[in-house]
Image (cartoon, rainbow, N blue to C red; front, top):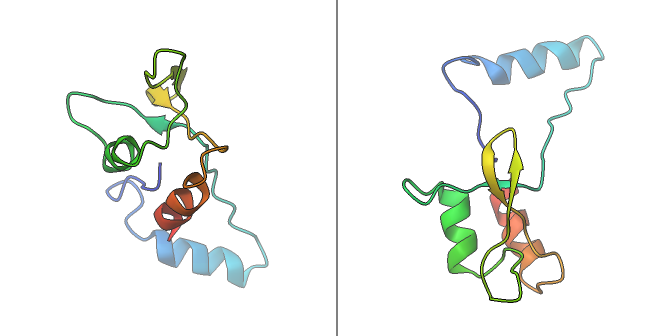
Length: 91
């Protein structure tokens, strides 16, 4: 989340500019799931843990789901800090 493969999309900025010039919209897909990797923590996941942003079970453990990225944690949108945390990662 919040990144892309810079090798595969070397000129992404130019590509987006080109399609906009042809009246085509670029709509990125941003899913709410954050890749969870405890061996090599993804910065967004690590930050979410530090700020206690993710959904938890009754034992106060982060709930893990599965997505295309593998194990995934999800923001708790009832957490008062979740919107600001998410917004900071979008900029």
